Length: 270
Ligand SMILES: Nc1ncnc2c1ncn2[C@@H]1O[C@H](COP(=O)(O)OP(=O)(O)OP(=O)(O)O)[C@@H](O)[C@H]1O
Ligand SMILES: [Mg+2]
Image 1 (cartoon, rainbow, N blue to C red):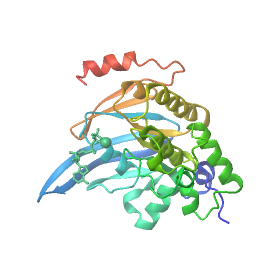
Image 2: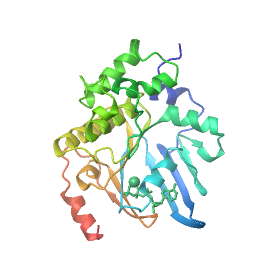
Image 3: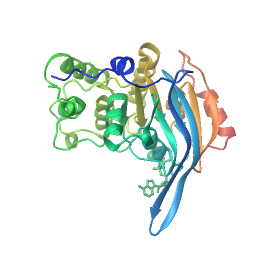
Image 4: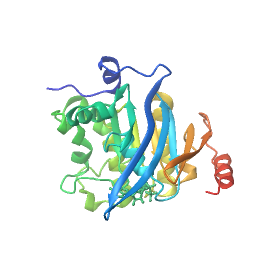
């Protein structure tokens, strides 16, 4: 039986060379052009960034500014037109499809903006998917324990048998978050993971994400429109028209106060 993947195992045994300065994720001059209705539309105009291991980074910016596109490139779900993504020491664009899939599976958890749950699977089976794909029986042993653990974290105990169409949008989003976290990925890439949650639920999830950074060294890249969510990050990158326009260093704080960030964003006209 294949072993349950764990980020610490993946980190210590893999061929990856961690960045000398503790960098886990780097982007160099990413350009992304889509072909749309017979013409080329450039969405990212040369984005470079670095994320340190254990860091919590938020990406903010107006609708259509390229946040989801950038997140997909960072997670190796799509390839840039030019430029490079380096994930835990591996240059994603130099990998074959198979190697990129392996890297993605071993190192990343992804929460999609529109959930991408499997409609015919129930909550437990959706969350268990990374184990099922890896050939691990999700009803036994450590895999089962981790599924229970993550379902508790997102407060979905009791909903295990529901299918996605029997859940609210907020509940579906929490299933997507649980699925992304169940293998304890080295880096979590989350596209508006609290976009459909009410104030209390979203606060709880963000608190849990913040704790997983602070206590377990989880690296998080969070895309959000919500300054209150972004205020949980150590650093906020502001994207506009396909480029990084500003970087706001907040630092790790126990008391999350969104007011300084809101003031700064207002000064930037956001
Ligand atoms: N596969 C695609 N083909 C063509 N154009 C695309 C594709 N994906 C994204 N785009 C375009 O790229 C631009 C940026 O889209 P993206 O989804 O990255 O924005 P976003 O910042 O995530 O917006 P939102 O906040 O609304 O989610 C948009 O104009 C969109 O139409
Ligand atoms: Mg988006």
